[in-house]
Image (cartoon, rainbow, N blue to C red; front, side, top):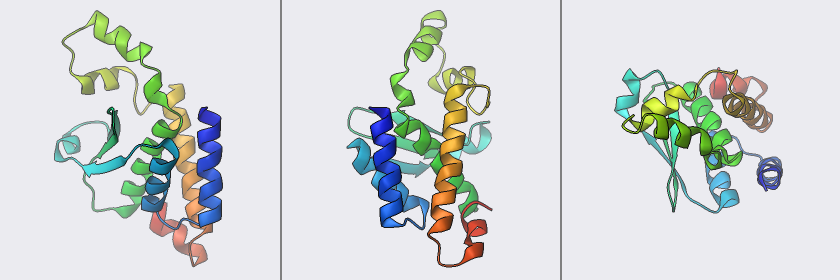
Length: 153
């Protein structure tokens, strides 16, 4: 099912010619049939993670660190979309195991324990590759060749 989601997402991006990450977020919400809410959260500014997705029953809530850089914002959102579209939230046994071993550990520390942001983790690697591919798609559909810098630096 994940492959079908990814194929649908990429086909839609090519057909619609997305020129910014917010168009990709709207399309991803349609593809997964669940709203994706993006929120800047001040508390993340002091944390080592730049963003994460909380998957709720009726929505995916993407929380990202506040930034003045549209480039940084776009990449973090692209990375988190990678987690959503690869359905990494369905691989709960990892986090369930950690919660069983240390039941009072806050959720953000569980995420840190799962090596978020480390590329040796297959989920993080997939999300990084997804964000890179999204940047490439957006760059192809920008009006001027140098616009890639405006999206992802």
